[in-house]
Image 1: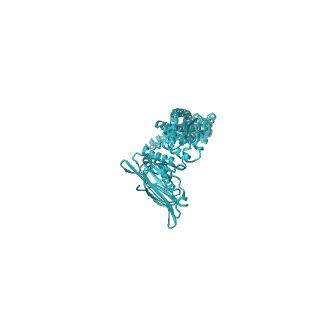
Image 2: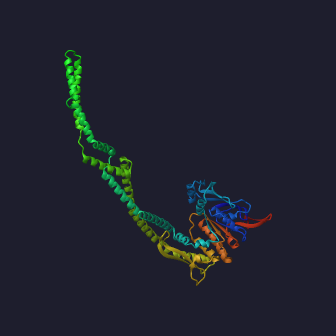
Image 3: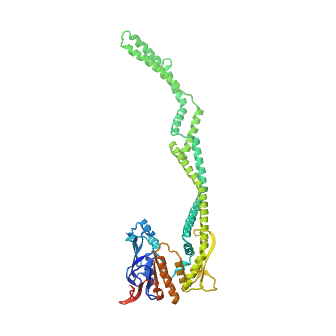
Length: 527
């Protein structure tokens, strides 16, 4: 609940400080006294958009502070904790201090919770868990089909609320898979072309059976074969120089024989003769090995090598600078094919999941529709009884369920139609002009609705256009709401019949001080 509210420099309010209690609390004052500015201040604390024109002239900025006390397990505590805002824990209760500043035109404003700067979006998210405001334009809210659908589900009970959440989640999941399927199908043609190309490239490289270093080896072999004739001629000449008559072999043999004959007189020459004999044998061996290298030209083998080098050259030009790079490209292509084939399988999965999730959502929505159809007439009767107690006897509410295609709200659209006078056809709330009857209908719907986790409910001029017995009925209903729900109910009113039912009173007055208008707020004490 909201325990304290401080408003500074907002419109005609110079400074107002309120300490608020439990139950039904009335904020009273004449029309134009500034009561609505208190509601504006509350809206700013709840994250509503700021109107810089509301800043009191010459003040620079407006400042609103509020202190809330909520149960320790309240969802707002975990929401704020998830966003780095610590709460002051006092056992069973948690205290939150919210501050909002609104600067004059051209300057910025700020929002803080427990002293920590927060975004307006987070402030609004937290505010929706703390308080609910039913203002002068409440007919716009209760006229929305989405509000009516949620209201009916709340009336139908916890099972309906839970089912509505499951339907919403299931439809979103089905839509997510459907979008994924559409995305996959949209790229299927391009993926098919890519797969065909990759498979062709893989087959081309695999068929070539590339090995690292092959081109270098074949190039050397081709060079050898291209020079085979010249090599053979050179070898033949060298062999002739070694072995022909008068060649190196003969000359060395002659020299060896002479030295050997001289060795009989000089034994030291025997070793040299032996070495000459060995040289002759070595010359014969070299000549033999040279002859073995004289391979005849093989044009067929050379052509085969050139063809192979051409294949390797084409692959290198397409897939890499050398054979290792070509082989790396091959492995990458194989991996890419596996990925694309997995995406092909993903189409089947996405189609199956979209179908199954939609079937599940359809089944859940059917169960939800049954609960809605059972609850609709009960809600209509309850609202009509409540309207009768608010001096609108004869008013009639119709809860219309119209079948439609599956959407996040289920398999039906919900429309509230109302007639305030006997014999008149019921018309959708959104098409009914705002007035006293509609204000009381809004109150009746709020009294019959569920309000989630909010601990404070604000009713601004919900008694507009009513008086006398109707006003007393409105006041009694608001007091009943505070007592039955256990929530704090703040009522902004100018009617004494309504304010009389509140357990706490705060009066707003407009004064002129030093020639300038200012509003003040004071708690009413005593009789």
